[in-house]
Image (cartoon, rainbow, N blue to C red; front, side):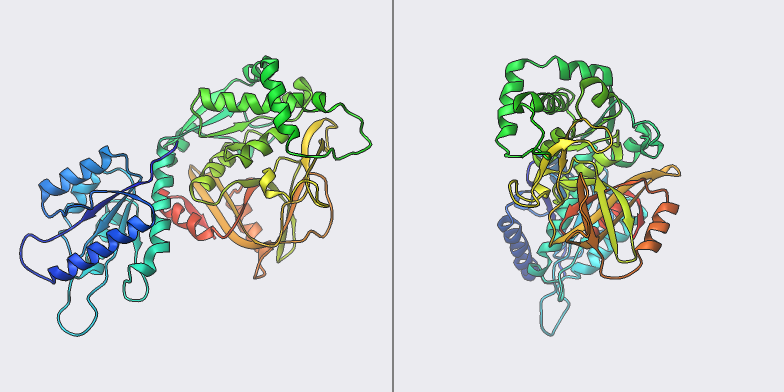
Length: 457
């Protein structure tokens, strides 16, 4: 789902005299100017609200405009009763953006933070999610912009989830029972649909694609400049790439036809045994292009990929936690990392394409993930009738050994990885996690709070 970059703004004013109304006008203008400079399309900020009629009318207009977030401003403290009016009409999280007091001596100007504290308490007791944004020092609006943008991003992600659908082609692969998906818990937790699709029909679609479309995609794949992992292997390139292009086109077709925001594919044993190829290069391309696609029937992995895109973390590397010591983790998977997380094609550590290590059939991507920057390790999963989440930040460092498939060694600033793994295993975390470039653990923690997920630090 593509959401417009619209944010709704409710600015509370007072009907009766009190506080510093001239200061209220100043901070209101500052807040609206800041939002406009951030590139948001603003709905509702051209007027103020101060009674049931104006609050109702403004919220209804914001909902009708399709806004992705609703920001509450209280340049003067407002009546807490209005919280209930708002949440009867707005189903998403609220962003409580605190305005500062007038600096200097004299009377208190607005009680803006007090008002947002009032609203926050009511929202929490009403079991409604919110983000409270307060700039340091002293409620500075300019200094709160990074937190404001994060709060809007979180609201966008929750809204997108509630309008999205995740597809599952087939089921989880044999034996990987920890990846089993519950459509009712998915809907209850995220608001998403789980749409199960036939693996047999998917294979028929792969095999039945028109040859002209396949040839055109083969040309696009060749343009990526990916060498074969085994230079001694003499395989005619068009035949080598035919099935991977078919997988790519079929997945795109299915996602479009069924309006899927994310998709999990049961890749083995049927696809390599029936089609003769693994779909991993196709998955690498798709994830690099901003599609949330997972393998091995990992529905929660696909939802996690969608969340990463919505939260600004970008594409993620779905991977096994292969081994660890007390400060590092070795991640590995057999060859479907996003191409844009790999090194540049053609360099010494660049990606190449070849056969699966355990089933000598193409088409996997061999090559390590880029190192030298911050990364976030994250996972959502269901256990005990509810969803859980973990996320923690580290640093991608050069590998200690070379493995086929995709690998990444991550170092963490403090010891305790062995104990963390024990805690996460005891909490039921599956054997797949996702690694994203950048530092995003705090954003995932706040998402957990918004969605009521059990957080594991």
